[in-house]
Length: 386
Image (tube, rainbow, N blue to C red; front, side):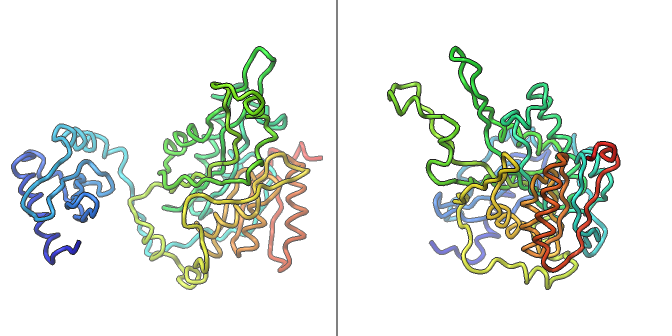
């Protein structure tokens, strides 16, 4: 349906008149967003936001297509409550705008560090990383990772790392986490196994440390890839209701952005080298939906690696050439190898010496252009290295 010229202005005039009549005491605290025409509902939708924070949606006004009047609005009581709550919290939550006219990343070369990320990342300044991509250790899913007293301690540990990642990540840049629910096997025939919904707890942690949710991408493996966990075998044998358990063949790739009042365009406009933006364009086919079909990775060295294909997609979609990619759980170096292949810098931190050693070997072999790579051991680990 064609929208008449001047309709946007007329829709705003109708909305302002409604505010004059219904929100007199709040008129100076509200601003109207851009009216957009909804083809499905056949009306204009006009967002409301507090004058101090254009990112916060506090309500909406719907105007009919013919611009005759209001169709529907957010409940007045809710709008007033949201404005009052925003005014009370602005003093502690206001985001500061950077004064610099152009963004220049910290000039850090490729690094692989043996150490604890919670301590290692304290040594790095803001703007060190322009992308964080990692797959944290799964809670007690493998013998190698059964090092937490309980699930609460595990989440506290993960949150501490997320805080460090947030502090070194550039404003408005992305943190991408590969994670899935974990199966805790039963201890006897009289007990049942259970799945721990780690991704949903991760969301809370990421928001608490200052990230905002962007996307949930589903990494789908070939059918049969998850059969080894034993789920679904009993149901296949007897087909009794209540015993049904689907075989997991997916993992989450959770995409978050470091909270900012700037749009993505700001990261593009303020980049120090516009040529790198052009060189980083995604050409040819790309993943249109949030379902990514990728074969799993395998390693005799590490029990839980993700494939290079997954790392390469994430790095292509969420960084530019010469950006630094951080993986605080470096593992065997898959993120580093992918970054190297895509002309990005990397910072890998790993606290297991056998994985650090293997990662070092892989990177030395893969570094065909003889780029500088620093292999360091954090001071607290010096006395424990074999």
